[in-house]
Every structure is written in C-alpha cells, then in structure tokens.
Length: 237
Image (cartoon, rainbow, N blue to C red; front, top):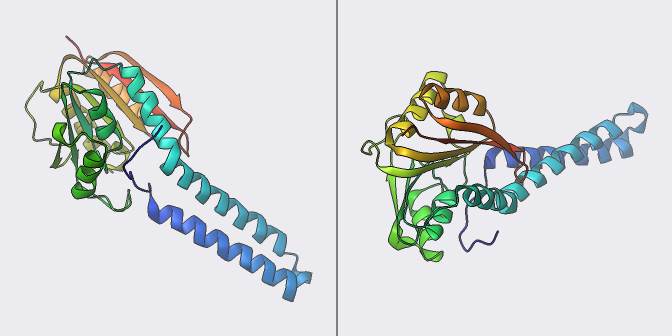
C-alpha cells in the first residue's frame, strides 16, 4: 500500500464542499444554541454538519490511502507475468499506470487522459510523469493526451487494459459504450480488462458480454469511499 508518488485528491470540489459546508453548519448550530436556543434547530444543524465533515474525511482518506489498497488488490488479481504492455484508460496522475509499471519490469505501461482537474486535483501529464520518476519506472511509462472514446492506438496492441474512476465521467451512454468498444479494440485476443468505478459498472459488464468477452464478473472493492465495483473480463481469442 506504499507509494512514493502523489496521486491526488479525487473530486476535490465535492470534498471541499462537504468540508466547508459541514464547518459552516457546525458553526451555525453553535450560534443558534447561544443566541436563539428556543428555535430548537441547533441539534439538527450540528448533526448535518457533522455528517458532512465525516463524509469529507472519508473521501480524503479514500484518496490518500483507500485507493492505494484498491489499486493493489486490482493488480494482484491480474497476476501480471512482468512482460505485458498495459494501458490505463483515464490514467489521471498514474495510480494504476505506475502501479502496473512497477510490476512489468520487462514490459511497458501507457496512460491516456484528457487531464480534467475537476475530477482529480492537479491532474496533468507532468504530474503523472513525475510520479513515474519518483517511483523509479519512468523508463517504461508513457502518457498520451486523448479521448477514451477514440484512442490513438493500433488494434490488438495491449495485453491488459485497466481503468479507475474514469469512464463514469463520460456523460452519454452511447459514448461510454464507445469507450468500452475502444478497450475491446486495443486488447489482444485473450487479453484482460479490469475497470474500477463508482457506478455504471453493470453497463460495462453488459457491453463486454455483447462484444464476446468471457469470464465477465463484478466484485466489490470496499477500500474506497464510496465503495466501488471492479469489472473483470477476458477478451475473446
């Protein structure tokens, strides 16, 4: 679960909103209790504010520790040989990308992202490459700027494709289906895919089955907040 790199705060705007909102409600409850106790609203404000603060704390812990455990569990299940070419779709600051690169000493890891800072704090290619450098895998990591719905890679060019908290950010159902289709296109026959996400994993599993993938399954990943699901599947031969 250790990491030398900084893999950022997920959904930073939401975390800040819960933290500031919770602090404001707790402060309001104290003011109500002091200046207008007869209103009887202080307890409700304090309970809601405390709930907001706990949510912010859990999301922060998920970003700083939980997702490292989740990453290791996902990669452990892939049981990489060490010579694979791995693609991380929506790689962000390189959580899965760098983790995979550490396990493929004779292979390589490629990440693709549009670098949205709304979904991940300070999300940029330079931060990803810096994490690869400090983790000692810069020689086998590359990143591309691109859309997961139309990836600039050849057919059947990767042994493994992974993705974490990325595909749900694609708003339209048809575009998410296109992203799954692109994952299928770039995977080699018999290649494996593991997609961790907070929602819509049932859609991903259904799309993979439609594309002929086998051993399609979903499992709970309890290390993140909110808890997430991982879709795992094997490409047709």
